[in-house]
Amino acid sequence: MRIAAAQDYQAFYEKELAFRRMMRYPPFSAMANVLVRSEKQEMAMRLSSELAILLTPPPESSGSWGGEAPVARVKNEYATSF
Image (cartoon, rainbow, N blue to C red):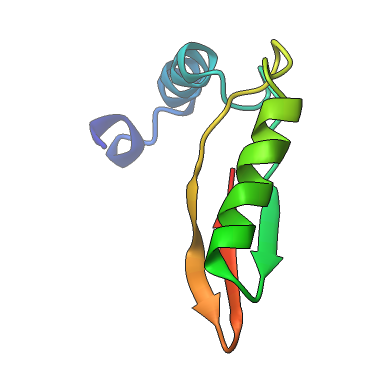
């Protein structure tokens, strides 16, 4: 925050770029969000797990995260994300 408050663009850029490299965030990797939806929660979870197995190991340039979708249920559909 101090760097931003001082409006030191170069220092902020260097710190942010080092952080992104360490965390394998863009531009050092590609990111995608896969959302699986189903009327049955068990089916959404099973399909999400099967897709994760198919995509294992993930490409070297991408990271892998998983869990519930930001909104796990809308009306009659459950969602999972990985």
